[in-house]
Length: 201
Image (cartoon, rainbow, N blue to C red; front, side):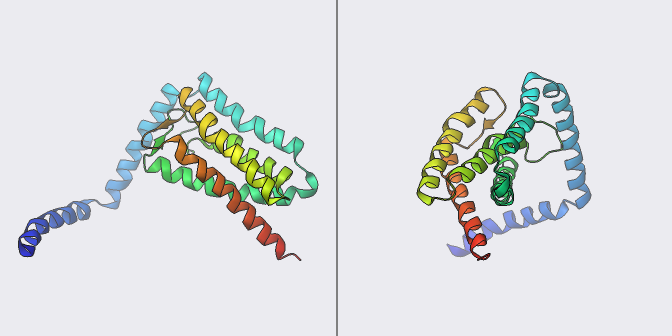
């Protein structure tokens, strides 16, 4: 039985190895070039200067201005550090999800930016988490509750709104998966910042 199974699988493995071995770096670069050419044509024909594109432009600018106006300048470095930790992690996860085709973005600010919905990551996710950290970061209990409420809002109101507007499209993802990720990421960044601050004492 074992020998029969090996005989059956071995040709498939050999075929797969030949296929993989036959793809050169040049083939990969050509495929990427073709992909980016198609993406740029799609973006120019379907995104650029549309109302939804302008919405992303506004989303890229207004939240940052609001944050600068309300941020506590005495804790600017600490708040910014929290946002950077959250931002790097969120954008990293967004890149994985979009490249793995778990979700996609029919509307993009630019075809050269990855992840594609950077304005949403910054304006709707990262900056609100930074403001909550500024207001409730001193108390773990309050921070847990505030970030839970924000995570619920992001997962069940903000994301569905983006879907409704046609800016974001879930392929195999579901909103409910996002809630614990938003929440745990916020708490993890809080723990990192507090740990770093403890080294200052």
